[in-house]
Length: 588
Image (cartoon, rainbow, N blue to C red):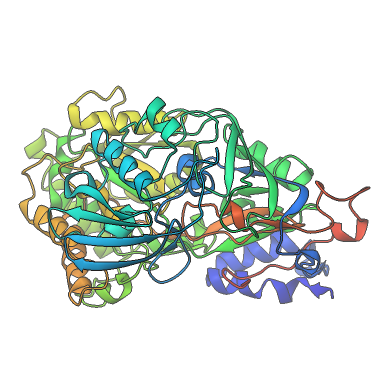
């Protein structure tokens, strides 16, 4: 059934809830022509998404889907290739069992897991408790350090072939979230590569039959600091769930530019089937002959942290950082920079995580201020002026501030620059070539070895652990990701360690989260920016529900009878009609 434009735009306009956004949405999507002082609207017809009609929920021979992963591909694809005790899920706790089938907490320092029986690695090697013990031994030799698991986990103990116990040296509430990243590798892989101990996350260093996941990597490699332009995945014949995955072959595309990937997804078949897109590209996606727009309320955020190591020393003053945050209008950024596709936050922390909304409700209400209120603007400028003499600036000088980020964030950086320049901050945008260059300078600043001078670094922080720790990790003073020198914020160390020790099911979890959040809000270590929705262009004949995080559940993808990889002949002309827009999370 066809629909008029105005019916399908209701969801989009309701999200924006801003007169200017509504006005531009109507102009961009109705083919307005102006005659004298009147508007003439053309009616645009849409069709319903028919891709669900011919899917089988079973593996489909010959099917092939190509997925564009420009951000954190080593996280996005990890659970498609590897297996762990648990894997990410769209439920309240954020995980579901994978290689484990159950667990029990014997004590705060002793966890027992029952393993799934009959599981084999890609090369046919059986997966048992011995596999878990071996992987943990290798992990302990060269671990990741973005949580506290490398310090807390003492050993894994085999009880029987399908029961294993984790021994901890202190209470640790993040264990089941760390378990997402305690990925298991075959003995052949461990003997060849071990664990890499990189600050990102371990992953597959080369193609081969090394994992437990629904797909096997047969070409390319994907790690945090090195990757091939593309990677090829094929269905794992030994996977424990014989109904999954549904698609026989997946190509992961990583090094194409966002603009080229969008063009391929929207205007061609057989090149890109799934691609994240910018908010500004939503309307073009809606009217694409081959793609449909998919939107998802997400747990992602923008991390924009101050460089308190080698940056301008004036930003070490909490009151200066607070003044800068007061100048940034999150509601305007959400409505205009992000086309309404996001939610303002207290500390750049999504309310989608368990317990966050409840903890926020315990905090003192913050006044809603606008830079367009002259009294507010004057007060912010006065605060900044009061520190100028201390740091060698003339009274009428503008305070210089350099923001380092990738080009993909220019759409929001330019508006941040506009707000800050209204309070006499001289903003310079330093755009880096790629993600690796940004992280290299970000991580080396703590050692005073960064090659690029910057005061704030901004990156799209996709939820990678299904827990607020995905934002909090930069406040852990004992890691290379720390935002400040160890010993400079003892109160924050206290709150972080309390958070580590408190599992999400504990009675005092919400209070613990509230205490940490309140301290972070008072210190203004980051710019407080909205939490963005996830927006995707998806081939019209692909059934795929984006996640609220960085993970891509490739094993859930299905294709219809009309998908380019399985059909005969050209794509039917009637299917080129735009598909009606769905609100975020509307499709189940």
